[in-house]
Image (tube, rainbow, N blue to C red; front, side, top):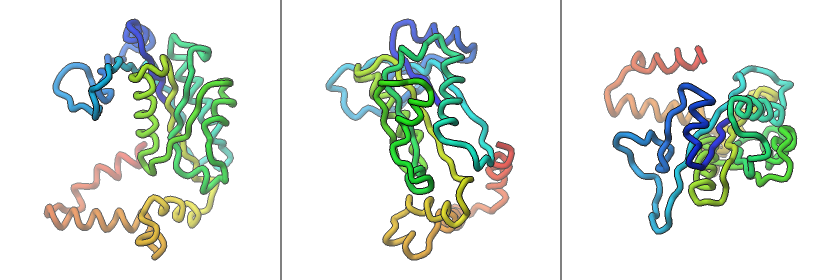
Length: 221
């Protein structure tokens, strides 16, 4: 969960909230210093600087009884607690989520999270971009501030899968494939990623041992 902010004093506020805060540029939320590649496709209108003012996270656990709204509220509360901003200053929230509609029969989770967090009356949107839903939500939050539409927004990424059986989760994840050509004929994300990895290893002559650190990091996290 990230709290994005515009304003001349935003960097100072972020520095007060966290000694590790870094100034962010208006281009793709990259460090202001050093080389960078613009993610903005048009320069016809002026862009405003965007800052990450705070952040909050919840543990990744196997808690079948957890609710998306409660997880979102916890992350939001943590972010606001570490920030100089308050709930009244937030005017929009963008939530990245892929599977809630499939696994929980609940689309449009953003207003539920906003209500749970006490953010009544603000603009909310749920962003879906498969495994990149959280990143897409961050992009929306960035554009909302850079365009001048909002001053302070919340960006949140949340998923819940452990409350469903493995087959349901596997099928849900497979909807991110080309269903007609892949998912509908039995492909899963595990099988597709396995094929991609095999192709990569063959093309570049890389052995499995080179990928071991990824597994170690995943289990550690």
